[in-house]
Every structure is written in structure tokens, then in C-alpha cells.
Length: 160
Image (cartoon, rainbow, N blue to C red; front, side, top):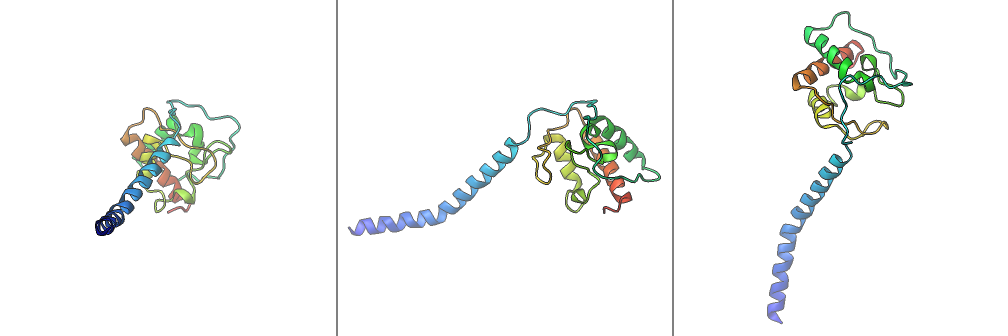
């Protein structure tokens, strides 16, 4: 009987010391797996056409001049992103959100968020358009230039 009390105390101590970290690690692993599972497996391909019927969601003022890298970014954006996100990142009703929008300001969605979205896709979290699949055949340099193009458009439209 005395041994059973001692054993029970040891088991309770072990439970208190290890149960919380194990449960926490398990919950984190489940959250990671669920977030990855929501990203569609299809990829956005090169030369994707604008999807019919998607009216622009915002009006975008263009800067008087783009930097050289942003000009390259515009070319890449037009080839890889405009099919969903619309001309000048104005979004398309029923298709994809505008990137010239306060939600995508640098303080909320940093440049790394754009890189990760293009490389790995992103699950829907601000809009109801559904998850974005990875963009096929785009380099890190192209993504950086596309991001610069978007940032220059954002600044021209008062998003800092």
C-alpha cells in the first residue's frame, strides 16, 4: 500500500512535467499539417489568361515612373500573377484579391509573405476566394521584383 502511494506520486510528477509539452507539440504539429493541407496541389502555370468576368476590385493609380527592378517586376506580374490578381494588382471580383490594398501593407504582409505565397501557395485567410496554389516557374529574383512592383503601386496609392 505504501509503495502504491509512492508510485502514484512519481506518475503524477511525470505527467505534470511531460504532458503539457507533449500536448503542445502535438497541437502545433496538427496546426502545421492542417495549414499545409489546405493549399491546393495544382500550380499556377506560365501565361495564364485573365479569368473572364472578374471586374477590378479597386482603382489603382499608377506611379509616374517605376524603378528598373519594378519594371521587370511588372513584366513578371503580368505573366504570372495578373491572370488572377488582375491588371496592376487591382484584384478581380470572384477570382482573387487586390494586392494594392491595406491588408497587404508591408507592416502586415511583409515581403517574405509574398515570396512564401508564390513558392508554396497560401491558404485563404483574409478573403473568401479560396486558397492560392504555388506559382509555377518563378524565381526568387522574379518574386522580389514583383514584390517591389506591388510596393511601388501601394505607395502611389497611399499604402505604406
